[in-house]
Image 1 (cartoon, rainbow, N blue to C red):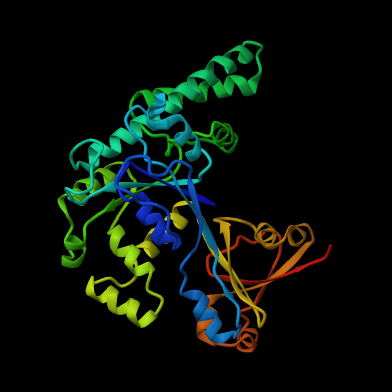
Image 2 (cartoon, rainbow, N blue to C red):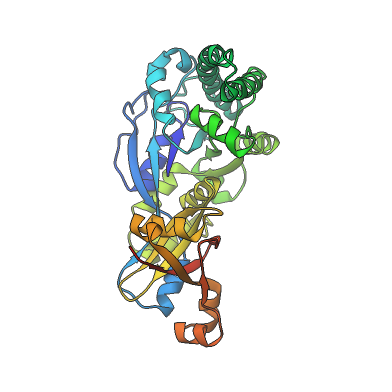
Length: 365
């Protein structure tokens, strides 16, 4: 699963990407410092792994991961190619969700391409470019599909109806991340690879003073209100502080640093978890002496699909699965006690995997 990090130039995208991935890519004070997208694989923080390992000892504890892509800053006119916008927008098409970074701090030494700090204006600049690019794409698609629909092709007729609705929504200035229909209609919508249909999280990059004082800046307050009105997730963090936290290896030193800024955990942990949830993902676990490991699967996935995440042979030859939940492990503490209390269930192909399940798959190929 890929999450794209977008925004205007100089809002802190590369700093946040560096902190997320412990990378050292340039984060300079000029537009288009990033040209090609930077990609990093990031572990999803999950305290439950250590909980499982407390009861089922293993030297190998492996988290699940999520991929982040730092995309070059977009500017006004990007949909028409300004600032290499066409190239940059193409990078976003390949991600599953978007983190839209917005500048929420004052600093005269860091230039702003629009000359002032205004989160709502900045968001609207970027989203307008995404809307325009999607409109261009859908209008071209409509011309093509209309010709096919004249023959009476039912699928083409259905797609024309959907295209008309989507185009109207875009023309009204609305994103398409809540545009969906039946399962067959959603397959058509998915095939358009739209920019505005992706789940979005707004990230307000604030300064150190706001963070330390524990107050919400006026920039974040206005952004949060706008996000709530549009049913979009919104969080704040300080990119520079997150960068400092990411460089501290010693856990005690890290906790002392977090305490200075009144933080329970790095803000990036919340961002990663929010992105993971926004993608409609859950975590199940496998646990034994060889390894304790977290795995990613879509919500409502059936047991064979979860098995296929581990290996395609597991899905192909799926027979059944022994399953219990981490909450039961915490209560009964050993697999023997789980068995004695009837907490390990045998489930078949129709079982819907739940977040926190610990699973042992049985298969035959």
